[in-house]
Image: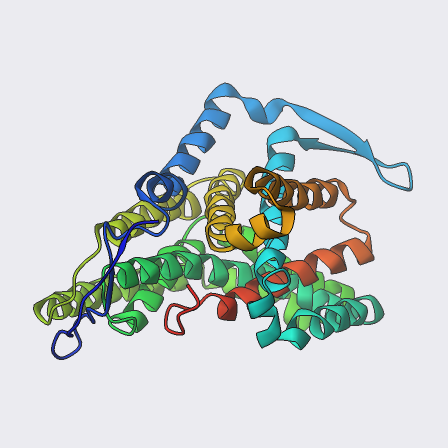
Length: 359
């Protein structure tokens, strides 16, 4: 970790607070940040290109479910799904193994996930709503991970944690959710609404058809809103810099790499490629965030840092590969997957906070 220099004073107006500046402005260090956080979207895009160029998607494995039905899945798709599920479960290293965090919200980390799992088993309505919600909350949640990293870089640069926060929030939603709503992969996301057919609720299951029927209008609205938001973003940050705000290079590079890859993948790529690329860098970032934040607790628990890192990886990937191999029609398995996903999205909203000094 870079040395911390304490400086007094504050910029006038809405500018940057100079209370704490981390030398270099990095979270965990220059090499760590550039590899795991800032350039990870471009590295994931390179991985996706390599998979396509080498034809790796043609390699498949077969497995059978409890009823003897055989299914095939591409090895790349299996690994991608496993890594995605893996990053979802390792939030427990922050929520349950960090005593300070656990003491703040004990019932949120115990009672609620158990109750949601039991409700999903007992009620088809809860099960279906959780399944659909997990798809769309994931889109929202993924955009906020980039937002959170950007706010940490602001903190490291000595900027006021509240300066430009709302703009960053909206801008990151536009960078991630915008290409989903306006791009070629909208229909792949809307398929989730077909699960309401299980409830004999046509008014809900036909939401996908209604949205797709207005896809051209939706695309125009998203693009126009994006242009307006970009102009507002640039104008507002120009004003902030005049009041003392310092634009972190790391944050700027992170936004550029993430936005470029998001627009290319969700806007123009195939769903398989987009899923692989976008989920790979998101999960990679999250593993790096958890290790950076919880390494001391993990090392103290397992007595040796390499062992702790091994436990983190094996626990996450073990769950990920187990879940990726399970048949998708087993209600308890899907219910567990939904609970882990939804709790991950929810927990991340309050266990990491720049404003409250949690990171």
